[in-house]
Length: 284
Image (cartoon, rainbow, N blue to C red; front, side, top):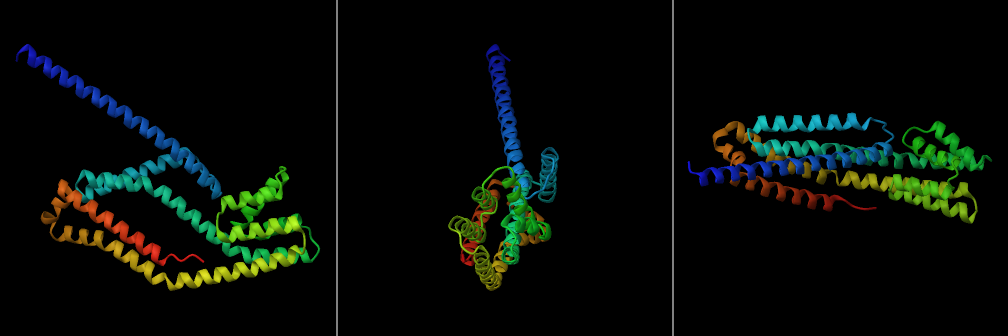
């Protein structure tokens, strides 16, 4: 080789090394930012759910789960894009799980409110004060109602006003039912009047609202089931066809044209599921 060829080869190797170093720095920085965002999000969500878990252990478990998903997807489909998709799905699972737990907690809180408001109104009619009635309700109620009302009382003991404590309650549980209760309690405490009667009216309103939401959920259950079935059919059919004709289906997962088809199918399926969800989602 001539000197010019050696120089060109050396320049190409130096450029490749520089690009590899830059890619490694970008990946390390992105991983650090993702870990910091994960830790902050997990700290807030676990605090809202009253789940006190070590963030470092949760990060390690999440990373191990994502790697396991990537390994299983790569071995099942024998392609790097499938492994990357499995890794992305594994990384997205913790956030989806925390969101599902938060929605379930808010539904349970709303379901416990009518009985709690009736008990609170009865205690006020019997002559108890609001603070003592809330303390007794915290003792006798199950989670999450007892946890949230206990936090309201704890904030008041630290000097927070009742209005601010109720606003913090709505920030933690931003549902329409909680907004109705918080607004009514703030108005009743500011303007005076019979708080027990106000609580009983709110309890009746909340109970009727929950009954209506239950009826709507029952009537739209078929549409939600159809969305799940329709959404599960394409990957299920792809798996069945891959098991029956692996040679014919392998280009779908190992070629750029097949990846483009999978991306288009995933985009259309996501759009269809979103449209079905908007149709069956009825706000009360």
